[in-house]
Length: 423
Image (cartoon, rainbow, N blue to C red; front, top):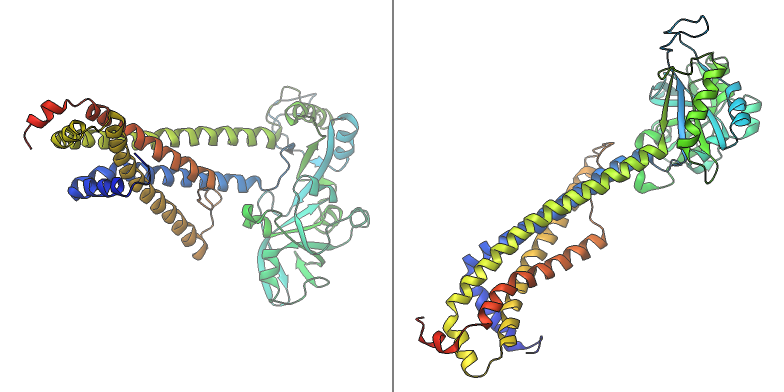
């Protein structure tokens, strides 16, 4: 039997529309299975995009370290002692740990995630203010849209200059107004804007990063009376070196430098980007596996329903099938017809579920953007092309499997007994 046989497709249409209610209810199981699979995969991708955005374009072979309070007395010093990282710690770490590529000290007004009121003329906004060094670009690259970034001369000369994020520019400056060369006031100190930055990857845009202002760390420390104190340090390892191997060495060196007990596990806070990135990857591999497992299970329930209904259809068509076999129809012809009917029913239901699922995800994405809903944990729910192809293959295979048992039963019908049957 030819695949593009007009009579064959006409017969499939007649069979499927003979009892429209039964066909619709049967197809709903497959529709719901594919619909929920697409919806869960899209939601999982949205969650993954949100978490990945927090990493942004940050180098994965990096770590952060900061001082806390000591929890163990050491060499006559009490526990609960506060201390700060210093500028000199940068050179000490670079000298003693050859695996390190870059150490970028950073300060922030108001502490981690703290904000500061920034003034320009009669306009004000609340933004993050960072004291940085040029090397920070190797830890967290940004895209310079106007002007330039910090350089070593800025740090050495303690220049009061600022590089602002695009969001800062939008708030403090009118559209089309030149920002480069103008001044902003931070805690009573004027800084000259020399650059405007944005995200390297717009698909991983993090709004909080665009609400930041970078100034030379030396100017920051001088202007805001930080002395030689450093808020935290960003450390990047050389190519081929694992952050997990360097991390304990960094803690050891800093503990020796600041008279902290080697047994004190609370004196330093540290965050390993490499380790957490791998954890996130493994987490989402597990989530996707679970989604496919649940979605495929739901789809399988729909497929079983179709298979059962097709068994009923075969029983109803026993006499018709018997007539066909009596006039010479081969078993393969019968199998092909039943499987084709099942595949068509499954494919139609599956594609409708696929289209509606993708449309719903696009609708959710549109609403999030239209109402400017910002979330650090959920961004751009979507289904990529490979997933759509995989879902298509699953639909076709599921339809073929659903039709095998009824088709095999139909092929084994005895034409003599079939002709004697009622109906």
